[in-house]
Image 1 (cartoon, rainbow, N blue to C red):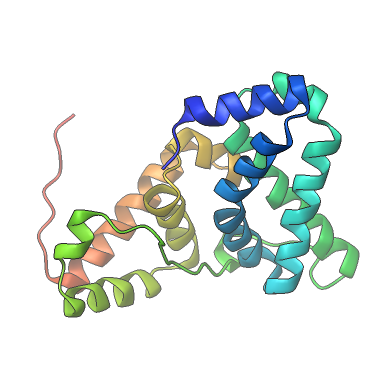
Image 2: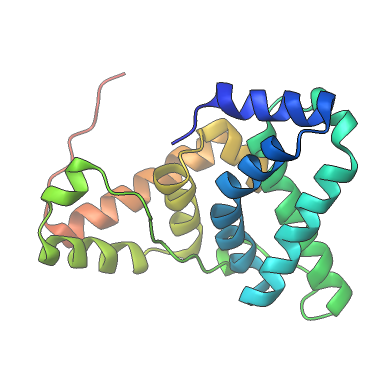
Length: 189
């Protein structure tokens, strides 16, 4: 997993030196998560590939302005969201789309030791619980747990409040816990 410093370095190298190697690293790092995110809007793998490719082409074309971008990860997600919505409007398939209408595929290519310890049955139950979440909860859960975004970043991407993110994650975790028959304890802040 790459850290923010590595992403910032790619951003700097692309913006200042037209570094194609850094651009390729950035593309490879973000392509799959952005593709899943775009697919949740446009409902087509081919169209999602086109959307993500358009965002990366635009990024390369505007590379001299990359230094002005504070959080490149949020910038890329917002760009994919906006490009997806523009595509939908252009195609007149849908005049507006809400977060509740999104479908999200949850699959992580990364395995950590905790995941490896879970039994196949437990993984199956967890996946079923996640698939049973309402669309808004599912996309927020995915962006936090799978893509590792911060609440503030997700709030920017989805144009909702941080409190909404917090509430939706609480709903998601409660529903997953209920399916898994686990008691969640409220943390005292």
